[in-house]
Length: 110
Length: 116
Image (tube, rainbow over all chains, first blue to last red; front, top):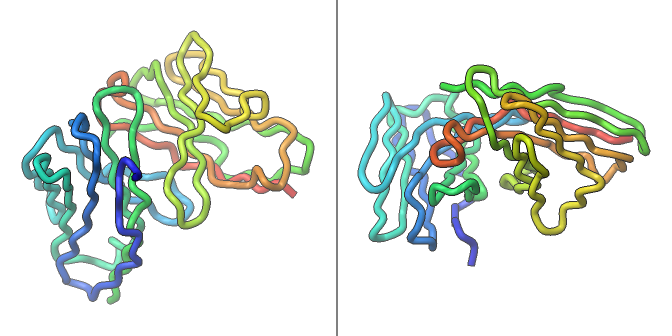
C-alpha cells in the first residue's frame, strides 16, 4: 500500500463548479499537509498548508484535514479555466521527507 | 512565499556529455534541498536529499555516481547528470523546505532535460 493515495483523474468540470480533490494516507504520524498546483512543464506551486486537523480557507480554496479518517481534501469554489492543472497532495511527519500523491489532473471548461 | 530558483529551465545535450542543474533558495537559507524526477503524468519521485556541508543521501535505485549532488552553500545545490543517456531524459525538480524539513517545501521551476 502506498503511503499516500490520490485519484489521478482526469477530472473535468464546467467553469463555476465546485471542485473536490481528495487524498488518503496510511501513516498516522503525518502532521503537515500541503496542496500543490502544477502547470504543465512547471514546478509545483504551494497552494495550501495545514498543520494537524481542521480547515483552512484562502480565497476560493479550502483545505480540510481529518486525521481520524486519514483523509484530506481541497475544495475549489467558482472554478476558473486558469485552475486547470495537476493538483498534488503532500504530507510530512515533520522529518526531512515529504510524501506525495500521484496528482489529480483537473480541466475547467469555459 | 519563499522563492526557489532552478536553472536552466530546459536543456538539450548529446549522449555522453554531462549537464549541471542549479537550485537556489533566493530569500532563505536551506540546509536541506531535495531533488526529484518526474515522468509524464506521474508524481514526483525523490532521487536524493542534498545536505549543506555533507554528502547527499540517495534513494534506493538512484546511482550516486551518475547523479552527482553538491550542496556548496546554504542557498545553492547542484545536480550534475554525468554521461547522460537518452533514458535520463526527464523533468528534474528541486525543492527546499522553509525550516529544516519541518514545514512546507517550495519548488523550483523544474528543468526539462532531453538527451539526444
